[in-house]
Image (cartoon, rainbow, N blue to C red; front, side, top):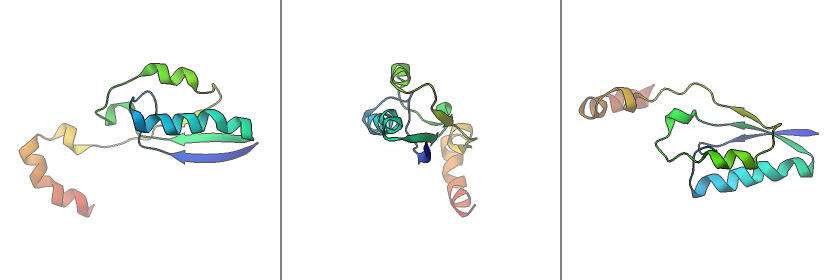
Length: 91
């Protein structure tokens, strides 16, 4: 079985319309002889509604990797974050 890497910022259990396209692609790839490996953001990184029911549609053999993601906007208050933004862009 061939392997493919799918990189997506929005992936279940995050809900929304943009998630459905990626989740259905991952669901049907094994039928075509592909083993998908998904790289996505951690669950806490997105401020979107969660829909855990979408995980039930995915195959059990699916590899999902959620690497560390540092979001300074959640730690630093609004006015200070605006001052920090130009520095963050240079990093």
